[in-house]
Length: 305
Image (cartoon, rainbow, N blue to C red; front, top):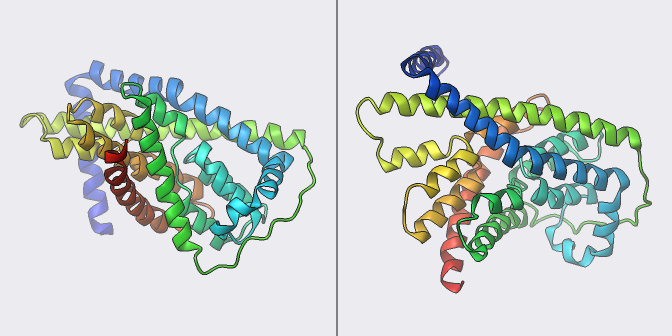
């Protein structure tokens, strides 16, 4: 495999250079479009919810909320309350933010490496408001269908992973606040957002270049366009909505893309966990499982709405 890596890289570089030379204007417009989506769709949700999540952790308010509602969370059987609150916060912050918070907790010895790997497998979400923002052309019930299937699939994974563990203990925490930790969170989220923008641009440059080369032969068939839609989730959702498929297949594709999360987010997560010796292969396998579960849940719930 390693012997094939260099030839593959040379071919990809050639494809990218060709696509730039054939039409520099369109090549650059693709980058600008990616950055516009990053600025108007990705930046607001990640910046806002990362800081909110950091405040909830910083003040230990999330621990207090979990303590008050502990009967609801006991069935999840997390090893400790820190792993549980990271799972719950991940629903709202999404990846790669949740991966960043997991690594931060691991470095602070609030969770173990084993707990971190379980969280990577079962706490991969897209921000619900991010999903809604891309489904404005649908009635709200279909947005809730996708969000519900997306969340339920992760809960099923966690139930499976933690099924043999003892119930979580819930100590009553004392509230606190550290202004230094809050400022540190701002620095981290800015660095995270810049990393996200770079990988989004790379994935969409690669996608645009491959489409440009394939278009020499003719318009790419639908299954190729579906594969390309999984390069980067933001533009991928845009592409799916342009396929003009009937409603149920469209919802199934959206469910798959949201749960698999796209190559771009996979690279972002790999970049975040790279120095922590956490398992990317586990993350990848469970994203495929989650995508399959999410599609099945949409199929089951669609006739009921």
